[in-house]
Amino acid sequence: MIIRPPEPEDNDELIQLDRVAPEEGLISYYVDRRPKYIHEPDAKGFFPYIAEVNGKIVGVVFSSIDELYVNGEPKACDYISSLRVHPEYRRRGIGRALIDRAVEKGREERADIFWAVIMGKNVASSRTFEECGFDRVGGHGFRVIISKGRRRFSDASLREATEGDFDDMATLFSSFYKSHNFRPKDTRKWLKSRCRVQGTRLGEVYVAERDGRVVATVRAVRQWLTTKMVITKLPLSMRFLSSLLRLGIEEGSLLKMIDVGAISFSQGEEMAATDLINFARRRFREESKIAFIQYVRGGEEEKFMTKARGFPGYSDVLAMSPDRKLEELDPIFPSR
Image (cartoon, rainbow, N blue to C red; front, top):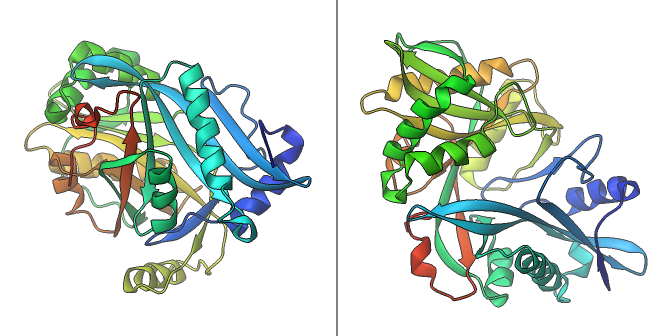
């Protein structure tokens, strides 16, 4: 077995691997990244690796080096994602080897924390990460939302964010996620690194404004993804499939999807946040009929999202740190 960085010519074979090894969970899915699955020369801190056996690509993993704040202190972190192993080559140690290579890269980049988000019910993937030294430290929720009408719930003004909004956004975000011990100064830097304006690949930011004050924020990522739902036999999945069929979308269709996150809002402004999510979805209406909305479990964001219409799910967050003091991660990943 050889583990190496991919080349642009590996793109088609990686797409095929994703199709035969979808993300397993309550609602399983895979993502096609077209026209380039994995070759992102503009992605700083993004390190993909593939496993090759006898010239055939049988596994892939991503290692993304970023920065998180723990109790107000910046920590270099390595987010390990998109682990895939071909079904015919599982239980041969390929997944563990890919994770070990991703962790090795993170240590080369001086990462303090290593973490991964595993779709709920994906027991095999969780076990593989745990065998590599990861511990379960929290939960991460999501909802798949089917696009619907234009009903407004508040009279807040909705618009795209500008550079001048980041101070207000940082204060709002820090207050909303107070259990994470974010400081506004750190949060401003964090937001600017992830929530750029003017349509970069990291997403577009929208704000709800009332009386000249930002009262809600969301980020909608214009991802170059098409999503194929691989429906399981759970009642939740069957309801989801029924909704797709009503939209004229057949099972197995390739769909574009928007990913909504970084949600925050002032006290009493839940309806403005709801309007803002719908506003972001409408901006992508011609490209996508579904939205994938993510949130941290255990806080105000989860209470808000449990009221949203859609199809709920959850993921387990697994993490490790070189000194094994995982309790320091609690401000980032509140336990369920």
